[in-house]
Length: 180
Length: 180
DNA sequence: TGGATTTAGTTGGACGTCGTAGTATCGTAC
DNA sequence: GTACGATACTACGACGTCCAACTAAATCCA
Image (tube, rainbow over all chains, first blue to last red; front, side):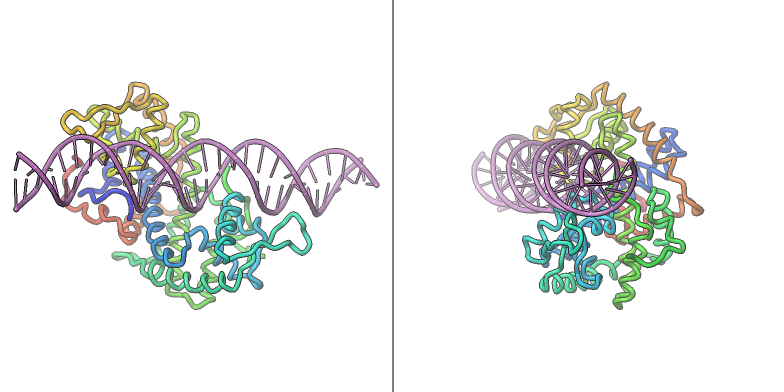
């Protein structure tokens, strides 16, 4: 399913060795962290897309569907979707196009702002979102088992990393109110 | 440079809240970890590509160049490159095509196996690789500063996560010999 | 030795992401 | 009341990733 087969040694550990041998010791830990994140992302995305395949969804489209299903009336302007999912407006257009083609979402006029467009969950979209969420929870999210550490500790580290990587939203969280 | 602007609250923390409110508590930590990794990857990749922009490189092409520059004679069969970089053969073909067009790499015949093709570093490719590595080390890798934790601890957690995500190469590392 | 299988790369298509540019509409300020 | 700047979305193109299908060459084995 994925890329190339097993290798017998760890390419990331090997890269780290190279970095240190070349006198780039001060950057070695950062390089390792970055490379690890890239690799983990690749593996997780593959697992997710596999779990989502029976529903004809990708992770990008699933996220959009899930976001809509959390709202009162299953509808949100495309711009707000992009802000919440942290993706480019063009990516939202693209995802909504495909979801609409599948009949899971509909575009509707915004009641007061004629520039804006509401992506609205169809009944089928709502049903698919629910089933896909169950599948993902069971096959991927709940199945993420650490060899020895606990996941909450990892989450704390990931939050640090996220701030270090420059996430503007991650740092403010303090006394911020609920969504909007 | 990136996607949509700041939001005032953290979408990942909000997603976690949603998961718990819906009774998916056992999957909430996993969901948060997965979502965090996706977001961090997005931010890091943007920072990297920005640092690499002056050299006309992307991260994918940089990795290939760096890998070649670590070998004795700056050459490796495409298949081996894919295995080391953990990407699909088609992605290697694509990257080598572009690097070759830029004059940073050349395709040469493998001395003994006529199926295989060696990607070979040109002198210019070697020079660009060195400069790009310095830029990346300085602007991204060494600049990755954690608010309070230390990066090596994060790296240990990332390694756990990587194994949990199913990296076959990460777990074997034990008594494995140096590369090949 | 000759056919079957595996391995190496390429090609073409599907997706997702982003940046740039263009159109419509809203808001505001003069 | 109108002109100008900000905002919402779409269109198009560049990249990267993967899969499936295909050719060529090496290997296995009967």
